[in-house]
Length: 154
Image 1 (cartoon, rainbow, N blue to C red):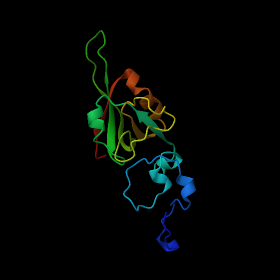
Image 2: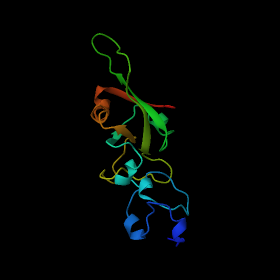
Image 3: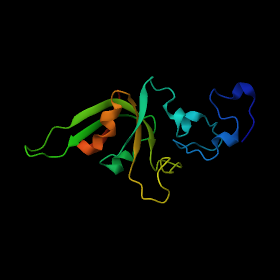
């Protein structure tokens, strides 16, 4: 940890290394970057999101495409329902233009999501910031069908 003049320290910067010890980075950061709570997995991850937002973990159907995502990218969350007795059903957009907060295995922060067992095989996981009203539907989306994350400019 280096010392900076007070006027050079951005708001929200971690000022005591002990406060960041053991935390997981949500995004890759280059050496020498000032660390703030917004780049750590936890409560600060939703900083800047609208009030009432929820961090929702999603298990995408296409892990290779999900690996191309990074925090800050806006995505539409689309579910392609499994075929029923009446044939294929139309895909549905469950949320539009939600920002990606965290992607498992991204960059130098390939630690598992907090609370998951160490050494256990990890499925691809993408965490998005969704409006609170959309969170329940997104949380169970993978039960309804295949979940796809489509980059969006919304």
